[in-house]
Image (cartoon, rainbow, N blue to C red):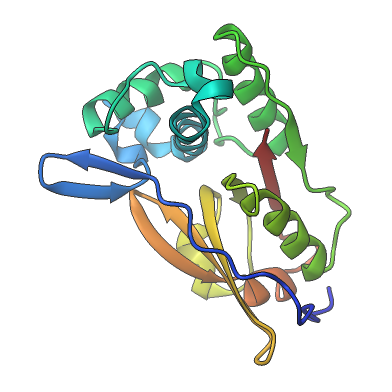
Length: 215
């Protein structure tokens, strides 16, 4: 789990995906918008799927237009309906959605139902170096594609609110001189920054982190 970061990595601006509710702007969706309490508690995976599919539809209309049926500025009411619909395909179990493959299959099934062909890209679970994670994220973000991240467990209490949780990666900030790397994420409708170097290199073998994006 080495912490060496290539000095020549490209710095990318964050992907912007804003959801509006009157005068309020959110950074992606929030699982607490689900009408049902149980769906709120287990809704982070479906929200990430909703974020990604709505973003693809709005950004690459020629290929992915039909992934999101509502046009114009993304608003909370329409996006919540989208969350509810995509949850029929991206289905959490009794302990939530703990498999990146199941998450991916659900997104692909949702897309297929709407006549859209998607391909999933999943970081090999055997990838252990932070450089492999950075390269994977950069590969997606350089194409302006957001990345789904699942953090199941982590020993560092700094990441407690992010464990057993899905989020949407929208940016990567590398500083090769200080060997620091931060990811920008959408979680609970907010923009956050997470130290990827700490997240990746201080995890134990049983601490699971998974990454995926779609083209």
